[in-house]
Image (cartoon, rainbow, N blue to C red):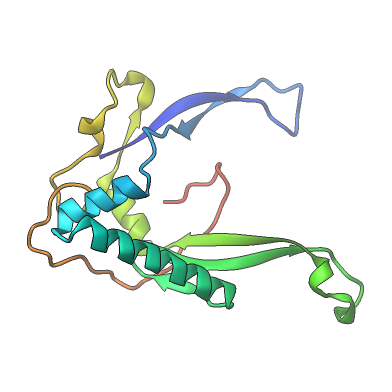
Length: 174
């Protein structure tokens, strides 16, 4: 499997007189929507698309419910989903109220397990040097990947290490 990148010329926002430099940026090969994801999971597990779709939708609805109730949702094979806030600074604690909140953010903190799987199963590939970035480049017969076929219906596990960090596009998440 590959993580594709392309060089991108970027100006220095702190120094407009500095020469722009090239940085590697991730290049997506497409989007997998809910229907595609359901079909892939169904093919891998042998569970009907209707059941997979129902479980997926119900799971996401429950994650939304739990997060809005103030819970941090921990999915060891993926990470932690939780909220953070941006607020105005007030002079005293008593002045802090709902009007102080500027924005609510939803965060996904990837687990160590998730980051390790992505890092070990991916090969960085320059998108510009690949003649045809098609399905062949993003599929695998490895039953431990998100593609391929797993006919024993055993599912997958996790090491429950659930840790990681956040960062911007310039940070290395792996």
